[in-house]
View 1 (cartoon, one colour):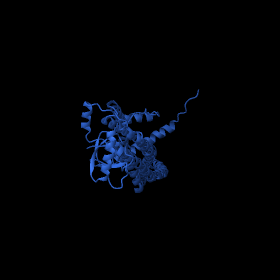
View 2 (cartoon, one colour):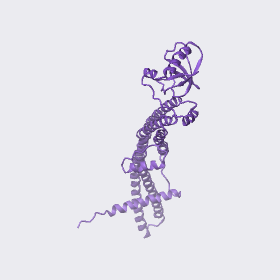
View 3 (cartoon, one colour):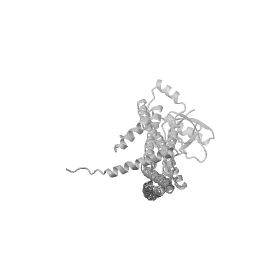
View 4 (tube, rainbow, N blue to C red):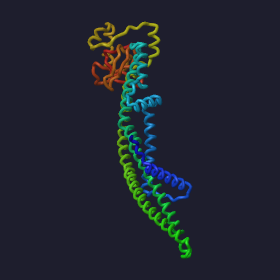
Length: 395
């Protein structure tokens, strides 16, 4: 029958070492034993590593809060990550808001000013939501993952070696304490040996004890040399690991640059999306509320924008044609301005043009050198070129 090989001697030695360390640690705390101090350079490296770990954890946690403000979602992502499974895809807040706006706009009617505005806002919010997803993904890969790797990898190794260094120091100081006690005991025995007469029978026993103490002193001295060598070796290993913190800082700096670049891209996208949205909403009439009240009492025929300018001209009544031809010719030859009603929606092609919304009233005038198919339009503080085929001049 095979019996498990149970090394009793090793177990006893380990228990003795643990007890010796516990006694040494307790006596140091009580001020009853001397403690070997680490050199100043190593102490500075340990302090730097501890500071790096502390602030890396804080920055990492707050970045996670910034990217995902919902604590429940963060917990869910953490659980799925630990289970090595992909979290289910859900709409983020901008996407959800955008979907609600689009649904509401469709409910109110895309042909109405409010419904059309809601749909445009919803589409922009969904684009922002997509940009938000890209920011989270990029930041997680390029910024959060390196920080987490340091906390869960490099710093754990440093902590392990630091604990070994602490144990080696306790072993060294315990050996020094035993050597000190052995020297004191040997000195007392030697003093007792010289004070007793040679014919006394006690002299034999004192000499025997003195020899034993001398042997113990030699063993303690050898133990100090061994523990000192092990302590120095462990201190060097720990020092090499801690000196890598400077490389860690350099790596985290590159990751920080990547994070800033990702944020810059995200905010630039959001700014451009909102700029385009503002431009679209700026084309809505200032008399929006009164127009809606009128449309609730009087049915308005829906007019589709022309596919080509020729078809638009053909679809207008003859009286409108006369206004457009004679009125615009008169306006172009004068320096004054006129009010004009917009016949169809028009999206500006560039920043020099003015977007229009059907049924709004704007001020138009001509400037020298302008193309014959265009006028300059004004709506409040906004101005830009407008096509004359989309206008009906008012008296």
